[in-house]
Length: 99
Image 1 (cartoon, one colour):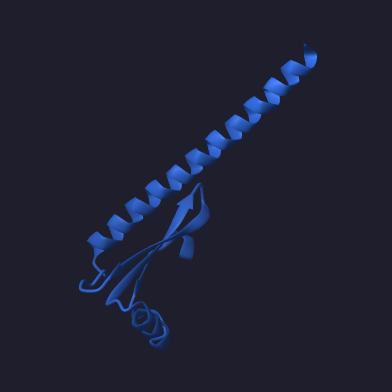
Image 2 (spheres, rainbow, N blue to C red):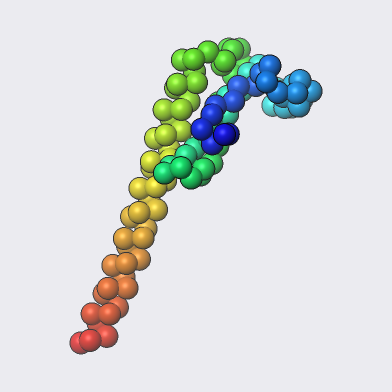
């Protein structure tokens, strides 16, 4: 499943023409695409570009996954605070109506 995997371009698992066109268009040597996932929900895509390094190594994949995880947690935390603020506004409105 894509939501749980990291994709490196170029990659032998992909059709050659599509990744090469993307790399040429972005003027880069290698790309790493990591889904941003929080609570099994895909929230976005974290992309690392390199003009001089091969990003297919396990270290780069682990680094990208760690950063994407942190981004997902930050997004989820921001959403939680937003819902909490909305809930507090509704509670205050209810209390003010009773006065």
